[in-house]
Length: 241
Image (cartoon, rainbow, N blue to C red):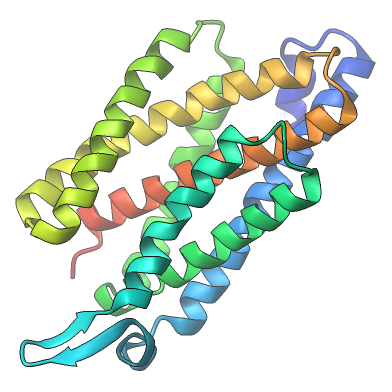
């Protein structure tokens, strides 16, 4: 990635160094969150953990309990807080919220180890990483303004988000399959769009060091969310055993 940064759009050594530093932080935050979430999901992705903490035994069998719904849906509030309060909250507090988000997502993701084989998860993770990397590079090097595409994709993302919540309770396999297909398209496109936006932030010399740090954190958070959602969309499509 550093070679790409050096070859595109940053015409001085100073700008190239600033861009490398900014994107180093962005990807540092992203990989931090992925490692935290992945480690927690792998550690607690067992039927025993799910039945003990996330479900209640009923006449119809084990059903999700209140704690499960808190873990699944509370990250939505944290995500909104991160994005709307970025200028008001201190960096340590933002990082704390970011860390809490990745922990909760880790527990929410633990259920995939019950639903899918380890082989399917590993292969899908590799495909996700490759797809994500290609789209991130394309978004960085393209000369085409992706702003309009980003606006359209965000509307589609909102539709997918609402549909996913509805289908969380309906549990329609056909609807889930359709959502997953649309998700792959939307999340890959948004990856390219956000990489272009992050390049603009890296190039902006008027931003203070504190603003750059916060934007790097928000950028890492955004790329992390896109990676996770792309992974889940691909897993639902191709990870069925």
